[in-house]
Amino acid sequence: MASGRGECGVATSARLQFPNFQHVQALRRRHSTPITVSPVHFPLASRREMNGQLDTEAMRDERDLHQRSMSTESSEPLLTGWPLSPQTPTTPFTKYSSYVPSSRLRRLLIVAFAALSATSLVIFASVSILSVNPHSVQQVPEVDAQTALKEPETSLTDENAPSTHSPYVLGPPTMRFRDNLRNDTQYITSWISAGWTNDVMTYANLIYLGIITSRVPIIAMFTPSHIGGDAETIPFGDVFDVPRFIRDSGVDILEWREVKDPGSNEVEDLGCWNVWEAVQYNEHYPRRSAVPGWLGLDVSYTRAPDWVHMIPNYEHDPHSTFWSLARLGFPEEREKNLVEPLPSPQHQAVLPPNEQVLCYDYVYYVCAQQSWEFEFDYSPAWRFVGKHLRWTPDLDAIAASYVRRAFGLPEDAETPPYIAIHVRHGDFRNYCTGMDLADCFAPISVIERRVNEVRDELLTRKGIDIPHTRVVMTSDESDQAWWDEVTALGWAKVDHDAWETVRTYGRWYPVLLDAVIQSNGLGFVGTDRSTYSTLSRRRVQDWHDGATRIVKWGYKDADAH
Image (cartoon, rainbow, N blue to C red):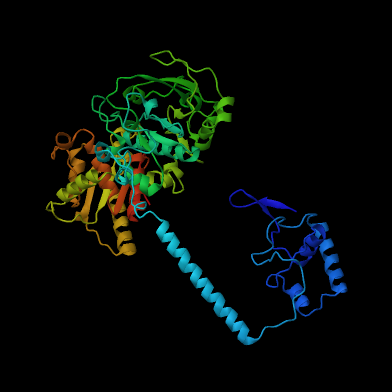
């Protein structure tokens, strides 16, 4: 008989069933003791017996049927050695007697049987009660008083108490990062090496790489490369609301400050991939970053293979792709592409890329399909990561107070819907060689036209009329005449110098607050080719379903339309 596995892994019959009359006949032939068939479970046979019609021809037909069934299933009867049914008697197989007792006698027998049953139950209950020790149910072992006062090792309260650390580390930050890593978890990390907005994009790319490699990203701090190297670093989680990101995106991340104590003086060796040298041809070394030094890491780099470069042998585009880098995070691809590592700068350690903590030197220039992908609506790094990086509540609150102050509103007033503008001129002057700045950059009149387009769209699409007095300008322009044109239109401005933002909050806050102010507007007008404007535009679109425009520049009448 065929057999299989049941839910608990116990072998079960494929056709398990109660024995039929044919099986009983087989048992009769096998055993010397006749077996009586229960009329309840075998109605066909019992009807024949009761009617006295158990003839030889019927027996032969049933025996033949049984032989056919045994040839297809088994030569052994089912449930051998088990009672045929709970009602199967053990008396020899005989015909039923034709004697039928009278109705009076039947009633007497029934009454007698009922009385006997009731008497038996009463006697049994009495004996059971008398035989039980009345103290046995209540007896408990004696407990020492000191033992009774001890707190249990675990309690329901302790189990339900919120953890003070991420489930992806063993506990609070340790002096050495490896002491805090879980053996059942793989991680991924990288460093930043550009301006703040590009660094935000770099960390978004890193987190997306963590998604597709099934690793937990460990995010480092922001370094002050664009505000002065003597400023302090700022933790990622002091800018972005990490718990909200994890909740909204469903992506778990860690900060390095959760893994390794920021006050640790331990310098630890780590093997990483050198992507930078494989995607550009001017710098023959890994991308330089201050982050490993801040983290106390001494990195030994292994050059990534040339095929990680999205456009091979093309010096004007250093982009790689997410999946080309992700390949290096899997054992077989890693093993096939290992070359001799560079010694680490401090300990001269020569280490291959770490397998538990997958590490790259720089992942800003990474995309899914085309370069500068944050500009496009399909960008996976934006859709799955950047969109969910919301500001901390503290930053949101400070930015809202700055907007109210710019509009001359009381501190306790509600922040009205507004349009934010970002005009970047500072370092973009370097791209205006051979022409007047007035021709290179869009004039205020062009920016005003874009603002009016945003106002019209918001009125048409949302029924919200935003006056010119609810437009706020943020810019690095230092020309006072230019600012006079701005205020002449009724637009407000954020004046960090006059409001002493640096003294009050720190050197990071002018750049952070401008980004928050821009992203929380219902409308936005930005500067073409500015990543700062790119992220503000995308935030306004996705967070507020807002209206946005980008002003082109670089030659005379570049934004004419």
